[in-house]
Amino acid sequence: MDGAQDDAELTALAEVAREYGHHLGSARFAGVAVDHEDRALTVYRVPDPAFDSELLTLLAGDIPVRLVDAPHSRTELLVARERVWALGDSIPITAISVPADGTRLVVTADAPEADTQAALDELVPGLAVAASGTAVPR
Image (tube, rainbow, N blue to C red; front, side, top):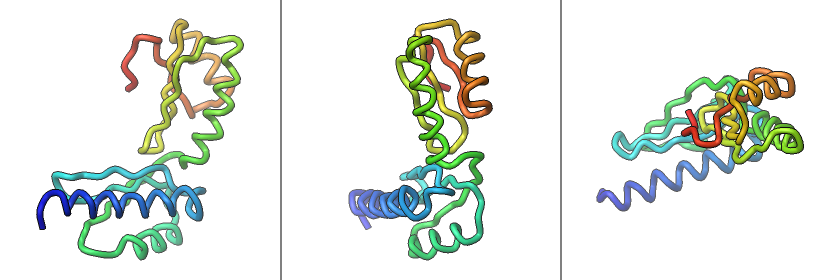
């Protein structure tokens, strides 16, 4: 296969993973990453044998699929993100990133990181990390 066809196939398979993860698998799905170099997919999910089995059935084929444990589902992080946006009255939040690997939200604000982190720890403990307004998300 040529590179364009490989990319199209990888992209389509990643979309299948996202669709399942955003709908029926939303309690477990965190995100998906395409590895063009190795021609593979990595799916981040909160471990669950039923989810894994269904997802691997949907993605069955020639492209390798790696399942990687994630501490939080995308749904859990999206709910936390909405709660964090509510802090906008007291902390000038400029961006909130939801990581594909299910780790923690990255909250960028035009405020001291320590103040923002303290507010995040109170509101959504363990679900978000603060970054200054000029920081590159980590």
